[in-house]
Length: 405
Ligand SMILES: NC(=O)c1ccc[n+]([C@@H]2O[C@H](COP(=O)([O-])OP(=O)(O)OC[C@H]3O[C@@H](n4cnc5c(N)ncnc54)[C@H](OP(=O)(O)O)[C@@H]3O)[C@@H](O)[C@H]2O)c1
Image 1 (cartoon, rainbow, N blue to C red):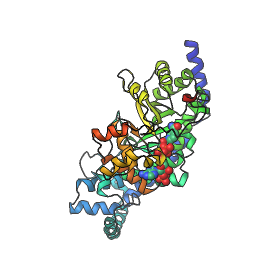
Image 2: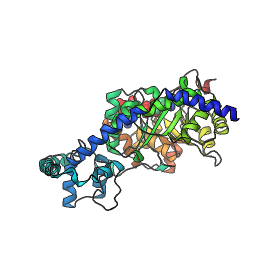
Image 3: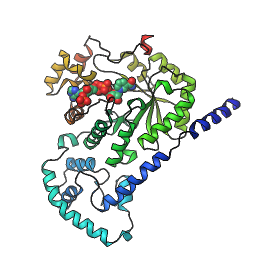
Image 4: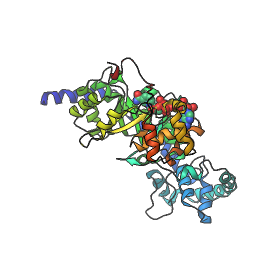
C-alpha cells in the first residue's frame, strides 16, 4: 500500500509538472485590473451600470428590477449596503483606496453624467425582463438544478450563449474538454465578472484520457482553459476507452482532495457501472449525467440513484431530446394546457422528477424559453400523462456505449 502510494505520488508529480497552472494566473490578472479600472470609471460592463445607479437614486427598485440588475451587473446590487453581499470582485473594486485620486473621481462623475442619458434609453429596452428575472432554479447540494449545455458550440457561439445565459440568471454551465470550448466558457465568465462562488461550472474528461496520469494533466489543462482554480463538478465523460474504475477514480479522488474539483461526477454510467464506481471511490460520486427526457425516462437509474445509501444526482443531457419532444402528442397537449411549449414541459417534467436539466441553446429565444420553463408547474395529472408515454427514443447511442455491450 505504502509502495503504491509512493509510486502514485511520483507518477502524479511527473504528470503534473508538464502541465502548469500559470495560464490561470495570466488570464485572471489582467481581468482583475481591467475590472477594477472599469469599475472606477463606471464601465463595469456593456450593460449600463449608470442605468442601475440612476434607478437606485430614484429609489424605484422593485425586487424583480433588483434581480435584473444583479444579473446584468453581478455583485453590485447591494453595493452601498454595509457588509453587503457583493461578490469578491465587486467588493475588491469597491474597497479601492481613496488614493486612486480625484482625477478618477472626476472621470466617474463625467461618465455618470454621460451614461445617465444612455441609461434611460437602455431602461426602455431592458435585455432581461421581469418574467425572466423573477425565476431561479432550486439547488441541490449547491448545484443549480437547471443549467446550460454547450455541446457543439464554437468559440463565438459559446461566448455569446454563455454571456446571454448568465445575464438571464443561468448559474450552471456544462462543458467538456471534448467540446473544444472550455476557453470560450472561461472567457465569457471572465467577461461577465461573476464571483466564482456564484457559478457552478462542470466539465468532463474524455474517454481517451481516463488513465490516472491523463486525468491529472487533463484536469489541469481544463482548469487553465476555463481560467479557474477549481471546477464544481468534474465528470468521467464515458466509461469507455481508458476508463478503469480504480485507476481513473483514484485520480478523481486526488483532484477532489486537492481542492481542484469540488465534486466527482460520472456520465453515461449504467446502474452496474455506478455501483462499481461507488464501491471503489474513496470520495462520493456526486452525479451521473445521462440522456433523459420523456422519451427516455431512465426509470431504473432514477430509482437506484434515489436510494438513501446511494444518493447520486441525475443530470439530464439532451433534456428536450434535441427538439424531438415537440413531436409528441401528450407533451403538446400538456403544453397547450399551460400555455407553454413541449420543450418547456419536458424541462418542467424533469424538475418534477428531481433531475437537473442542462438544455443547450444558442439563440436568445431558446435560452429564454427554456429558462421560463422554471415557471411551468405541472400537476399530478400532467405528470401521469407524460409518464404514460410509451414511445422510446435514445439520441446518443454509440456502439461502444455500455448499454450496447
Ligand atoms: N455527457 C454526455 O455524453 C453528453 C451528451 C450529449 C449532451 N451533453 C450535454 O447536454 C447538453 C444538452 O444536450 P443536447 O445539446 O444534446 O440536446 P438538447 O439540449 O436536448 O437540444 C439542443 C438543441 O435543441 C435546440 N433548442 C434549444 N432550446 C430549444 C427550444 N426551446 N425550442 C426548440 N429547440 C430548442 C437547440 O438549438 P439552438 O442551439 O439553435 O438554440 C439545439 O439544436 C449538451 O449541450 C451537453 O452540454 C452531454
